[in-house]
Length: 149
Image (cartoon, rainbow, N blue to C red):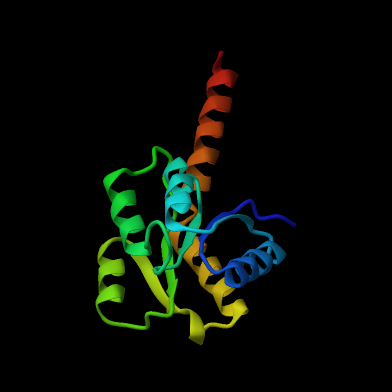
């Protein structure tokens, strides 16, 4: 059964990107994937993703620049939480990512695929699926308005 939750994966490593896409789709998430930060930002600015998985070290635009630009030019339709997945274990990159709005910073080398799915599932549950809820509310409001007439 599909859960209608949308995940954006922004990851330059093809093997890692394909692994995330596969495990998330097997867990019934709808997945959009991009191979670099600039393409990921373009997708994120469209909005409506329940979770964004973001690598930090990528060509064309790194993850920290992605976070800064997304803050500077937010989407009109809200996105859910951003989880950074990187092999830059700790330090300034982690602090900066969290300051810029990421809700979690996971070290790829320490994560098994099922743990990534668990982190995405937890993030969607804790965020209340904001994007999905707004869509449902708009549809309900529209339906209610039609019933009154």
